[in-house]
Image (cartoon, rainbow, N blue to C red):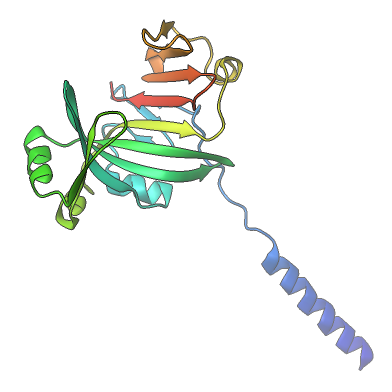
Length: 203
């Protein structure tokens, strides 16, 4: 009777241990894993720029973004989806998706916006109503901006992406340089005092 009890107890412990073991997960896509698709556009984080919709991107990221319209004098108005914090492969970052929306749609969304706020950059941010948010779900992602919480230096970028085709010095900031990788449709903005900004564009 004692042996039966011990065997049963060991079996219960083994089941509990198996339940507590983490399940094997697929490796998370990383920002330096860029694939050039047949249409010439990039795929990063499994998001195929110019093809993947905002709704599909939310499923891939397993998060809901915050959408808004941004306008600024002298610049084209944009519809964007913002993810304040995503974590992939242990890397935490902010993520912004640019969405394919016509000028007429942007004008309509602005007129029905819930509020407008002036940003530090000088742009106006328009908070969208529910109908506008729903209409953006099926729009395609045209560009992606990735801002890691860990600042990257030149050596780290070169190790992951290789030598850039050229490096552009910012006219208004001696500490800011932009590395251009046209074959990846990618630019990386580096500044030792600010966060790294990685921008993936459609072709």
